[in-house]
Image 1: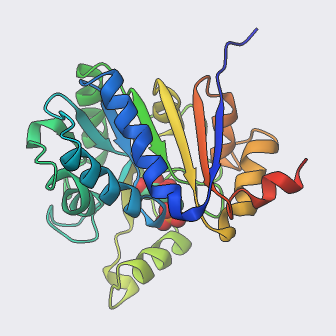
Image 2: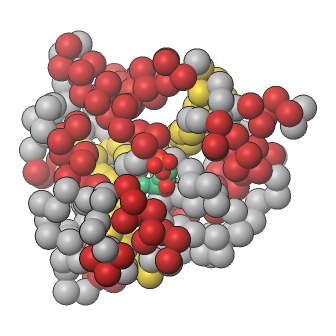
Amino acid sequence: MTDAVWKFKVVPKERFDDEAARLAIRQLQRKPASVVGLATGDTTNGMHRTLAEKIVQEKIDVSCVSVCNLDEAAGLPDDHPARGISRLKRMLYDPIALKPEQIVCFRGQPDDLEAECRAFEAALARRGGIDLQFVGIGLNGHIAFCEPGMPFHAGCCAVELNAGQREEMRRKFQYASLDDVPTRAMTMGIKSIMHASRVVLLAKGSHKAGIVRAALTGPVTPELPASVLQLHPRLTVLLDDEAAAGMAESK
Ligand code: F6R
């Protein structure tokens, strides 16, 4: 017996950021003291900027909200531009004037990464857990820094970054050399993500069509971390028409 409620929405790519931002706003309107988890990356940059604009224009009260980010590379100074928190601050947190106490994040250079993860989890628990968690999906099916093979029971934890992840970071953040790219990161685990009351999976672009289809219609396996979302009782999937192309093929 399951009371799972899945919502599935496909929108033209020009409407994707707007629709994603609207999901966050509806949550804040339903529960102004929501805890909202955010992912960083190409999928969500536009959403974060749009969300900031809407919150300001529509005068949405964010004084009671808490936000957290899914993951963070380790070993970078707090204000380093490649840190997820720096990007979120620039695009969303500063424009809507969130106070530091409303933001749950991993510090850049903690002495003990595992202890930092415990502190992160404790900060979320004190706020009552995550109400709405946004996740993106990587081309190998990762969510957050949970790479293929990570057990589903993993909580928030420190991980080693593999060569592929570090190369992608070098390219995205224009590091001069691979030697400068962090080797470790802190991430919410699959268990932490699955404990959120609601999860929104976001994907846009034709390059995501195959992995979206595999994650949502294939077997649930740690080899494809995002496939676990099939088991979440309150999952919303928001895709642009290009990322949804593989779903049509699967019918
Ligand atoms: C980042 C995160 C990652 C990204 C994923 C997709 O916080 O959680 O799982 O969502 O790597 O990245 P983009 O959106 O850049 O394609």
